[in-house]
Length: 125
Image 1 (cartoon, rainbow, N blue to C red):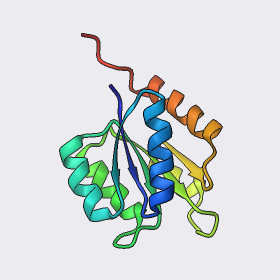
Image 2 (cartoon, one colour; image 1 turned 60 degrees about the vertical axis):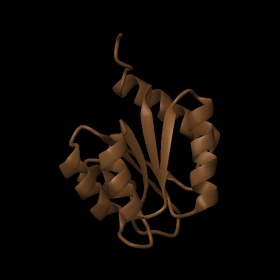
Image 3 (cartoon, rainbow, N blue to C red; image 1 turned 180 degrees about the vertical axis):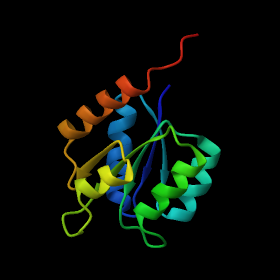
Image 4 (cartoon, rainbow, N blue to C red; image 1 turned 90 degrees about the vertical axis):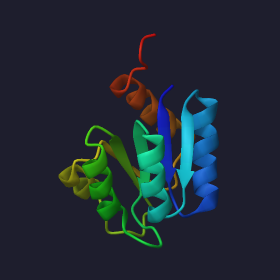
């Protein structure tokens, strides 16, 4: 099963995204801070990460760099509110797999999950 980690300090956003991901057949793990996310990333080894750019303890672009050092093949998608100066161009420059603007609508999230399925097909048993 494909595992997706959601990193967002807004509990409502994080839980809403997580429920949608689970209903669509993915495994999900959640973190609200960069510190939690780093520990979880090492332990859970997610296939993809939805990463908020603004976290209380470290900006998402810095956390992105740590994730890529740990696992260069993890697909990381930035999610951000419209009030930030971080853009899709910034995400591409860093090497992110994608970028989504908040609020995240279920149809957009469904397209993203389909993309993740294509990038990370489940292992054949």
